[in-house]
Amino acid sequence: MIALTGVSRTYPGGVAALREVSLRIGHGELVAIAGPSGSGKSTMLNVIGTLDRPTTGSVHIDGHDVSALTDNQLSALRATTIGFVFQSFHLAPRVPALDNVADGLVYTGMSRSERRRRAAEALERVGLGHRMDHEPHELSGGERQRVAIARAVAGDPPLLLADEPTGALDSVSGAGVMELLRELNAAGTTIVIITHDREIADRLPRQVRMRDGEIVSDSAQEPVRLWK
Ligand code: ADP
Ligand code: ADP
Figure 1 (tube, rainbow, N blue to C red):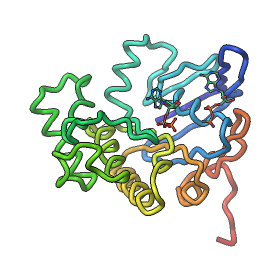
Figure 2 (tube, rainbow, N blue to C red; figure 1 turned 90 degrees about the vertical axis):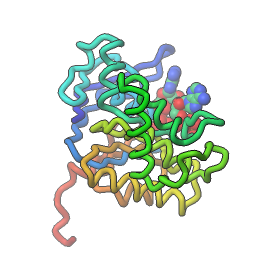
Figure 3 (tube, rainbow, N blue to C red; figure 1 turned 45 degrees about the vertical axis):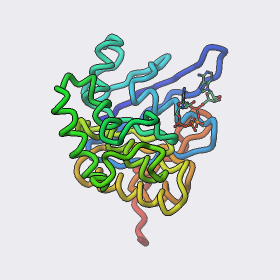
């Protein structure tokens, strides 16, 4: 699903946010990207999400060589293939949950009625069938993040990228959001989550740790622990 090979990203001014990073993530994986602030996690997620292009190295997403695609082709790839979830929800204020989710499908070319049907289905999937008419300010933090997740998965993208999805939530709501992400993963979605929270990272099936723009450990590469 994701293949980064020798990827570096240097920002104007000379900060090397990624240094020769190589990483493969298969269909159906659930992966945590962990590491201290400034280690390159967001840059890596932006490169995987095709929001940013590497300075050098190659990126393949769902079989597409990102460097061979124009910006318009990348927008189309994102619309069909990748859902995004952010720490701060990124919902439109004063807009009911159903429309917040349906509006995320505008770029798919679906009709308005199809978008609303899909949005209702996605809200049911995240357990918010009873909150469709609620505006973000009428919802709890955990519910807002569920709406944001419904928005991200309404078009059934095979890949979901989440940047600190529990970072703005108390631990109970955060645990609920992680449980929801696990369910979506069990239903087939490949998920990559940035997290500062070691407890969350430690519970996921695969953990990639970064420091200073490099991958310093990847639990998928570790030898089997015979005493387990
Ligand atoms: P993390 O998500 O782990 O906190 P980032 O990927 O945001 O790390 O940042 C990695 C490094 O790149 C940091 O030194 C950060 O200051 C720098 N950086 C991030 N975004 C930019 C930018 N747009 N311009 C310049 N430097 C940036
Ligand atoms: P945070 O809000 O803590 O930065 P998010 O995951 O919501 O975390 O943000 C992801 C990225 O989008 C960050 O690099 C952040 O700077 C940027 N971002 C978040 N909100 C906005 C906004 N309203 N306008 C512009 N950029 C934003």
